[in-house]
Image 1 (cartoon, rainbow, N blue to C red):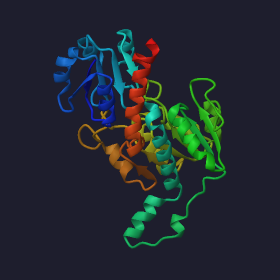
Image 2 (cartoon, rainbow, N blue to C red):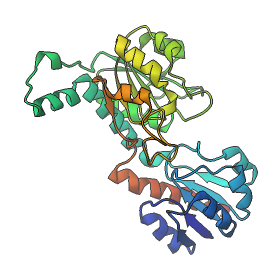
Image 3 (cartoon, one colour):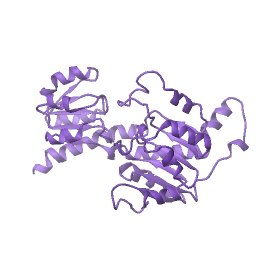
Image 4 (spheres, rainbow, N blue to C red):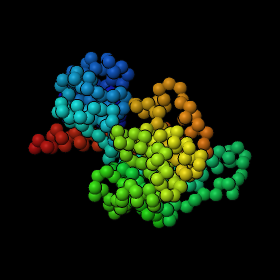
Length: 315
């Protein structure tokens, strides 16, 4: 096959595809229009999130057999149209699930212990012990919404703590030895921490808004390592200011560019500027699944699934 790589990934991806006898072309800079003009030459695409692969693009990809996404979500691909064309879709949530679980736990412990605030104060010569008194995780109920690869990885990281872990998912029978599945109403009644691990869909965009937040019985901490537009930022700010949400760890932001490579399309939105002023918020630039180890594992996951589909299933 002729395979076009549209984003840089771990070298093992091209090395192993070449060893299988495939031809690899790299194009990390051309515009979507330039790529679309030559896509008819290729049997496969490897991409992260550089641009959206829509129906118009796919119509030009007359030889396309597969799309490999070096990540978990497929929201930047018209999956229904691709599937109808017979294009095999490969995603790699197994490759960065551990990284996401560790990042979410790190954010949670940092929030509970006010590490970013106290670090900044000490660097500025301020030694405040009482105002930086933290909270312990033990005894809390952790609610997870979205109990697929990422949600399960996070619950696994919590096994060393004396916490009650509950999960909500639109699919039935998703609970396991680490978390019991409950209704959304039960989760909102019991949770002291909410961690989001949902894909971007019509149902999850702006899911966390004022009505959703006010349905929680207890003030709670919020973690979002999923997608930024799952949380309505203006409503989050109100909840943080009122202490209905005690703190937020956000690896993703509502106005983040869909490529995930840049912060915003133009200048920083006013609502984000307001968010940045709050001390009870920890931010990172969409790197929860972005580790040295996951860089390699994402590539290897794509290779393994490619071999399974195009080689082993035919035997």
